[in-house]
Length: 614
Ligand code: MN
Image (cartoon, rainbow, N blue to C red):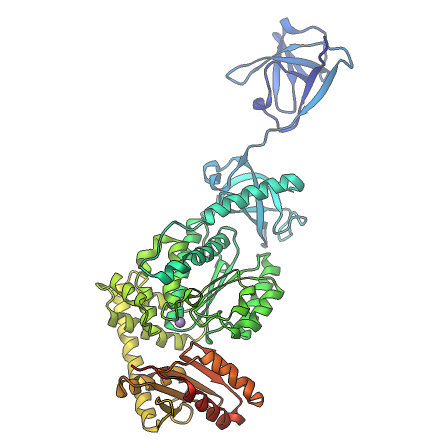
């Protein structure tokens, strides 16, 4: 004959679908009927050997070679007996053809067994089953495995492993869940193939939509690629169940930036089957008092995330810094994040220091492309929010205007953003919202105040309450500011510098209400505003002096505060100087015992900056 016959052995789990007509199988006699013999091909697939096709006498449990004549449409299998001499054939094992289901398809397969290939992104031990959160190329779902109440199932499976799960698709508390019958870790090429399939799909799904900025702006156009990159990192974090910690400056601009992204991310999580209200670890927004990532903040974040990582098997988070993160002052915290190899991305409009870039995955800052602080964090945040989830655009369209007036932007971008919303949010309304945000954030301190802030920003579909709340907060804030100004203004001292600039000094410690709104920085700003009006078209510098700090506000002077602070620090090694901020608005800290020396030196330095003719 020349060719060797092949005899197939049907493996466990194989079904009729796995049988091929004409193939020869090794079967086992199950029983007899008047019309023929029943033969099992495995423990569940059975065929009939019609008595006309029987060649030898058999008894139950005898092994027998059979060829499949026909598979009928009702699933019945007709067999005929084959006799082959020992050694004249080869045996091949038939394994079950596995149909891999996708997680997005579970809802269509409720009550049925499915096989899933996915990466494990979280493992949580409950008092009952172990919950494995898994992610494939279509989505994220939970798989529950139970061996004993409160005991970790499959202890060999770790976060990051590629697994094959066999189990029943079910709905539990309105969420899909697989009840695991078997789970195995894929290794080698098998794992690599699944890994690449998932990565490729997530890469594609993380790609932001093809949109352009809301306004015409060369600065935004030049930043667009980096903003897309940053939005993609955030989208990928959501798609892979990586927690996101958003740290932002606790002022109106920072709040606008952060709430825009928060709105986009929470909706994106929901759109992808997640529940951010239940899984609060997925996204957390925390205001920071300083306009940089302080050691205290990074320490608190690290403490919490590392405990959660151990306790709940979570991934380490993506850290997103908004309206802070660009400056040299962030360096000590980045050295901490670097130890734990955390992913950090920054959206800021403070003057950037390039030494920090090596710690960042993406860094959006208008100074990188010839822009300045006038393109504020709130503007950048709103555009990035659109790139994360364009569906929320209408809700946050006024955020750039609120942020712009809050940070006193003089960039043309502010006018362009204001014209987008001029009907509903004219400039004075944006100023009110900005003041209300600053006032309320002062009392919220480091809480995100999510729902109150949403009411102030009119995100809650309760415009009546929004109007009442903003009106109240603005009235209270203005009364507090007025009281503070009445107290402070009589104590302002005045001098004219050799540069021609007016320099005003006011002691915010001795001659201002403390531990209330407005705080020293804002109080100094308000004093500065009054003086700027009084000395129209003239260069003005205002210093709000505390016991160990000074707040610097200026107009019409070509200042570079971060540079000046560095110079002073080098010149006065025993003064403990630090600080920075924007080029013309910032602060400096020092030790109390060197107060008068530092202030004298500070004034000397300020006198050297050239003035603008206004
Ligand atoms: Mn800002």
